[in-house]
Image 1 (cartoon, rainbow, N blue to C red):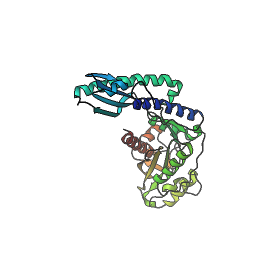
Image 2: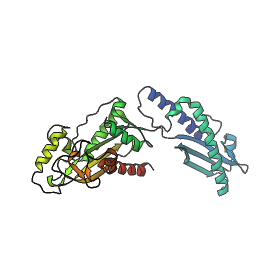
Image 3: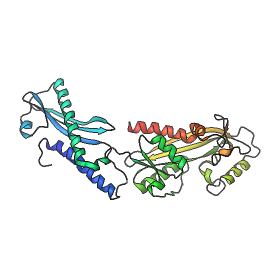
Length: 327
């Protein structure tokens, strides 16, 4: 920025933000970026005290004789205007708290006007500002996507891998649910460039020293063979007296470009029956009796199950971690 009708530094911030949005818009239209990183709108303006009067957007002649001057950078995010930087200097004298408040009020008014001008200059490209970031779920399960979309819709545009046009089959080499969830989420983030969420869950049976654990889906040897897995579980528990305590466990990992990864964990206590009950659910649900529901997971309706499930509890913990990280 070589010339401006006010402060060159603040004009560079305001104009630079417009240039950034135009660049992001083009990269998204060209398919280089899958998502917009622009989380809020930024503009800056100068203010100062000239001849004892508070003035906005000082030009050179005003700035050179100002008793005090100030540069103010502000951000508009989720409808709230806040200060990013306030740099004020008493050039010829100290300024009072009353004058400071007047300068900040002037700056806020000026920034609001500049932000309207930015949007006008950007036109359709303004759509990249404050756009909800995409969150790709490492699943194509409609029920799971629907549940997560409901829970996370205020923060993310939740999409499945199918909706993103990608497939990911990261090898689950971790020794814990948390490690496997992280492996899947990070692989998906690298593939899409977007925030990604993955979960890993399974059954922990106390008498079996935690088995099937991370091998729950392939306990009998073939991944996803629920019937064979249930048969083997009952065989391994033959002769074991009740209560045969167990719990479903779920780890959820959320990874975002440039942010620290988040991992949440939830469990649901129960016991393993002698024979399956119920037609709903999947996996070990027909054998898992929940004292809270007074039914197996296969007998319970989806809403009741989701209220106490290991996944619901992990998601609740994840939302708390998100709130703490993002504020």
